[in-house]
Image (cartoon, rainbow over all chains, first blue to last red; front, top):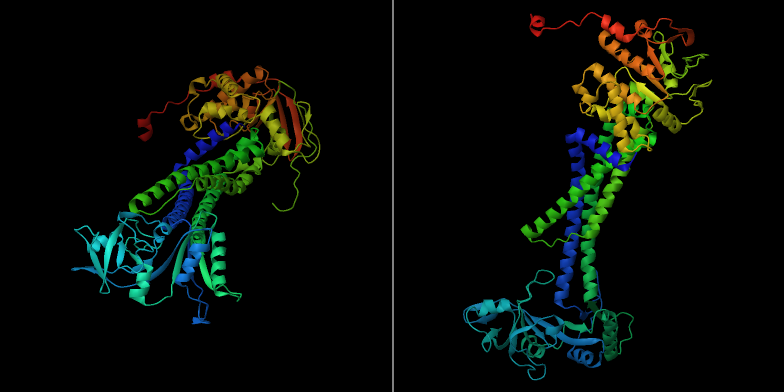
Length: 401
Length: 239
């Protein structure tokens, strides 16, 4: 029998029991739509995390003291980072484009009656390019000329909080009673990786913080950026080498921890990978249940149509013809369910994206794989009922009432 | 039931020649059905031979038997066995679907011709539930004709029909036989047997009688001799 004839016969049989066909198709539709939507959700969140991470600075490297804690107890006093480390890295590292310390002080910035609970970050001029900040107005302070100067550069949130009506350039803000002159304003950047407001920042020369605010020479973090993608590992090794050399470090453990942007992306995406795997597995189970629905309905259909099968065999149908006839029915159910499910899944993803502003990304792979899985589902779950039909004895089948 | 082997037919031996119209008679349990199943290649004899159109069938596998049924045999059943919600012409086309050599155009052409032979060309697109019992059986006969079989096997083909309609059906069989069709007609009604040229009688699995009918009754004449059908007036019936 030609495939076209088989398709015609199958469609006619399916139309004969519209409600039943609809319900079997629905089982698959729900399964597939769930898979598509869940995968879109997982892919979307992964993509948005990556985008945000990239926005933070593509090749950023963060150096921190290696706190060797066991059971919450610090085992040995950790090595601290110093200004000299920053200078050594700046002067000697070849895989590094920029380097900046990062010392934060928390408090309130006050201008007249306005205040802003923003932490003060002591950085060097390189920090802007490491973190992809840009100056909107005014200038960034200079590492040498503004050493220990009482100047600052502020983000847009701070501008809104402190200078709702006036141009902040040249004005003075008070931070812990110390006046800081605003010399630059940053362009808006939006929220960061973990939802923090990246525009709620006040930058000041790190020497200013060390000298006037925290009275310490220790640096908590050093930010650097490698010269390009793929150089993170080399840059890390180089930095670690410089830091060890300065200390004549001989112990087997590293004195500092170095995070690269790439590692952080991997860390975050591996969590979201797991999440999307779990979601997809749950969706897959519903597709499986849909397949069982098809199998069930095909068994009923075979039993109901025993006499028809007997007749077809009597007038010359081979077992194979009967097998294909029923297999086509189950495959058509599952592919129809698949097609509708994919459409519904895409529609649902787009709706969630627009209505709830969630990052959703329908992947072509998930669509193709879903369709393939539907075909396999139809064949797999249709096989046993179809085989049962094909093995009926024509005499017995004709006698069936 | 159980493990007891029943030999439904024992040592039955006969030939049916091309162009013959044979009735096979017997009470229930006589082996009629088994005989029909073997003749129709639905079943194989446990011993002995069945040669159809020069081909030994007793050793054939399921698929080979299906091929023989598809190309050499036409079945007419007591309960018509038409596919419901399927038009008359599509029911007639059905056997040809299982013969890959026949194109869809040829299928249609042959089905139309078969329906013309049973006088139902005007009902081609009717569904079985829009046809009377006699018409349904005529569609079934057309279906049995469409693959141009070497033998048409009828299994109590008039069993569900009243006398008038039965005779009409027998008229069709006689007409087909005159056109050279070989027919084996299983029945337990003696008057149906009188329309055929030869009657084989089975009893308890044995061939009891195999006689040539000297006086074949003409179904058309018998039909015309029947009293006119009672015209039912619905109001009378209700009163």
